[in-house]
Image (cartoon, rainbow, N blue to C red):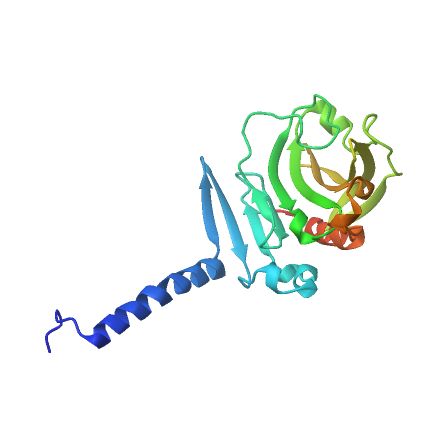
Length: 240
């Protein structure tokens, strides 16, 4: 047999390999995780199942064991958090201090490590605009001193509550704000750890449904469903 001879079955084998190999590579990449090198930092994204939440229904969003995990080494930020695979995550934080590392931080500098976004398509044909979850921290003396006290600024605030996440006590703050037909509800989980004030918080953004014409046939978004997913994401947060 001449191995360099082109036959109908050699063409068929080549076509099969061309179609199958990319899918095999994608599957293995999902199974064993993806290492992202951002500057001098290494961020590891690990998915336990490789399933996309978009096609798995409500059960997927209730089972955090099926989500992918953002893992940070102690040399970087030193935490892990899980989130559904079809949500958008931004790991490209800057080493330069920022003042939006948590809501209502005023001019106190800190670092925003991660932003996860739930798109409007998660609850379609409703007045849900988006939701964002952020992880930030600050070693500023002012940030630490005010970490577990209600903010003097911002919208109406509820009485702080307390909870424990993976063995670490957190104080929970809730506030709301509105403007230009938009409504923002923020829940902020805060704790002091290793000489820093940490904030794991999320904001649910919706629009005034009365601003849309009836022909749009929009429904009021499912707030309990959105908040449930966000709370489960917060519940996976763990210091390394």
